[in-house]
Length: 380
Image (cartoon, rainbow, N blue to C red; front, side, top):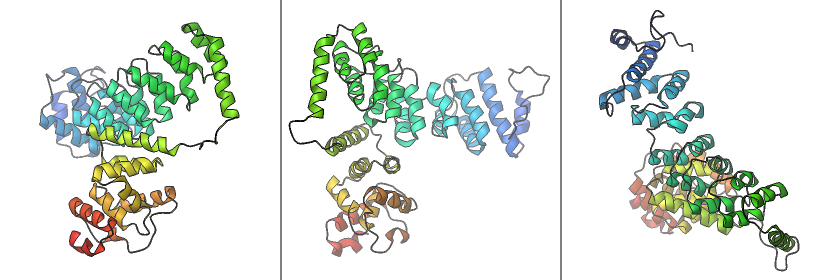
């Protein structure tokens, strides 16, 4: 779609539109007029920024017009509002969760976004959205910790190269630990201003020759002693004296997922959308811990539902935390791919029976997973 000129050509390019022009557009019901009106009001607010917050009525007008606007208009709107201190918070948050080409200017620059907004994006949006948050100038330690908790390599890389991020000493330590398995973090960490000598010595043990020289030049590192330690460590891995360890420590991964869920729940940021995203990203353990925490179930109960011969119990658990029954069939297909085709496909599709309240679904789940099916009808 080609945007028509907002104001007559005779007027200067940076001038605000006349109120009469906007009034005429307001009376025009066409899509083109709606979009011109939206951008016109933005231009007017830019020229004469409102004192304090916008009125609720004007904020609602912005939000309504933006939801009706086509993609290219929303993209222009995002660019115009990226630095606006007067922008309506509701509209900024809608744009922040839009497709990434629209959301990026808002995520990287908008002064309206608060920590809670950024944490929501980290939980609900795509990997590209998370990277944009990690690159945002001067993100708080709270947001940086959430990025580190999620442990996505590309997002960690964006955070590590963001020199303005407020990363705690513990956060830097955890980044160094992540660099053991994510080689791309090692170079940026050797140059990071928050890297301490103690952490440099730890990092030294698993970087290449060039990065070791960089660390040695920056810190007082005993290369001979550390070189011997590295050799011993490598020798121990190549010729272990004990039983060969499991290459994937599932217990550690499960514990990390549990801690992440606990932190999100403590911060009031745990939502049903996280469960859907966890399945999409093939993180079955995160899904199980999240469903357990949101529904007030034990992890054992959730895992029993995931391994059951029928998906009925799992459906009730998902309905109890607000996952729509229209979403459940697709979610079930993805879960079976991650879980050895379980839960099984016995029984009828209970999600076709009709809507179910969250409290009734929770009661049905607990009755069914407890094995006492005699009370199931009453619970539902």
